[in-house]
Length: 580
Image (cartoon, rainbow, N blue to C red):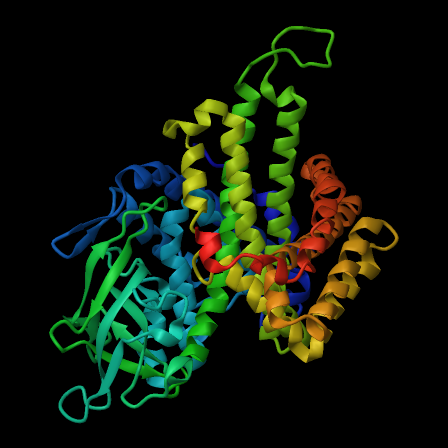
């Protein structure tokens, strides 16, 4: 259950894939010099391993508990969060004018990677706060920013996002929570919020002094569907004029969900306005709530993809340690019949290398995406649009990687992997939520083929694949061919395929595209290793990248037929026959 930060591979990805040196050459991110970057990556790794990792097992066993309206977490969580805030980790990429360090989003991703590898359930608390900061910074009023951002940036207060309702699920246009304008009295100009939200992560807890809920609701006479949704800021405690928490707002946690995993993360059913006195403030324009909320969700989707890397890293470390210690049978191809550690057996070696290759590929894609986001922040419109294309890739494929790697970890442990005490089962259980929340992976794939593929009439996606094909053509023809296949499928989907055909092939197409980008970024790492980068991990990196390029890239190429099979074969049965 021990965890050692993957510092060297993280630094390699930050340098090569995010291009941190180019970011540091700008005035906005000038503080991200090499010494600063190394200090952050090493520092958060040491903090996560020393303080948050030891809480992971207790968090799984004891979980969060609701007692008399108060959510209790296991011993150590309050101190762990207090130390996280005191050391300034929450403020890494926060806006400088509100107490943040103003460093690149890339480094905030690294903070979350280390925290989540140490303790995925616990890391959901700061992850959502980062998203709330982003939404308020882009869409909040000056008064809202002044009142809420300093405390959110420091981590003294935490944030949530409230979208889902029991009857709505992923269809946000069906939500029923209401917001009624207040005409007079002390809350004149604000709104009374009424309704319930489900699956609210860290919707109630005692680790932060206040909780800032961002809640989607409908104004009276709002248009139907998603066009009639507004965003409201609803604090757990009202905020006094001096900025301190005041009286309790009319918001409460009704119950906690009993889940497959992430047991230390309280997943709350939240009720707003049971007594008719839940007070909220409008964020942004009326009926434009989804636009504001998607600022938060875009950030969250990248960070959920990050969770695939986190679980992949933790599961890989556990599997490698177990395989090196577990002695069983002689190696089949060896004349020596003495039993050896299972790490010597060919199929176990295959699984271990696959775990490493997938995890490192997802990490390379994560930091490439983060680097594009940072360039977009600097005003690079092409990078901003490329980042938009990459978001569904890292969210969907990154979390799929987390599932596969965690499953392989259980397999390597054999029967002991199915026993809770080894920890392998917890990684598998914790990983399973990531392909579901912040938009299921099917929704990510749909976003790719319906929205992102059409950016600039397809030019954004086509340019990405052309860059990969051109860069890989000399060294890696299989990778270049995969990129060319992705470009051709994208053109077919955009110009010829029906909407049903596009959606039917969206998931394999999303996987192909993600593997193409990840393979490209690993190829860039391989070249950097050849140039002297990360000498301490060069041999292992060469082996894992070769595994990815020689085995995982050809697998992805085999998805072309599925991506272009169309929807008709899916409907040869009626719904009754299929369910029958």
